[in-house]
Image 1 (cartoon, rainbow, N blue to C red):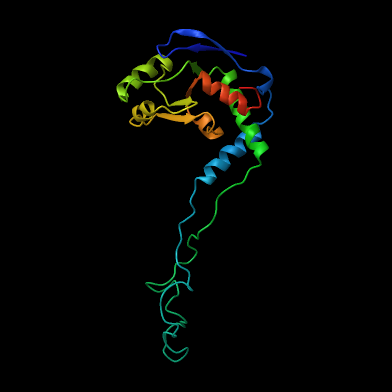
Image 2 (image 1 turned 135 degrees about the vertical axis):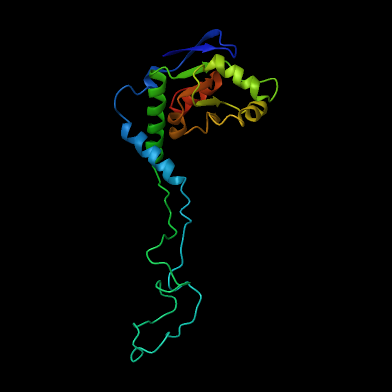
Length: 211
């Protein structure tokens, strides 16, 4: 598969080859993509919310009043949820939401997601993305030529340039990722993807091809 390459000014600058045998053109891997996205989102959850149970609330173990003869309801502990300052009934507990996925399933999901974006023509390949300075304005002007749609944009590079990183931090709709660290969720989350030639080579290597 040949992908057209443009320069940072938007002019044609040749082509780059992506091996056809690495692309998944059938439904294989669809479930893996779903599992990878669900697993990634689950792994972002901290699970640190917690309330105190009866055994954890500070207080005395003395019975509030005797069992019989007072005319009041029976009570056995000041730590009971019915008391102010007592425990919380049925509250959240700390838990681990993380999901472990086999490496082969993660690799299949990434390859499937990348194939879908390449086959749909949703990845713009640019020679390189380098800025002379860290001004956000210059990056905005460059993106208008590289990815003219006013939507969320993912910039995939082999090495994150310092000026590029500083210029993009004021743009909430733009995110930069290294090709060797890109995951399935990030690849699918953005409406447009702009990748450098070097990044495409890295992505192809990650799919099992030669860089």
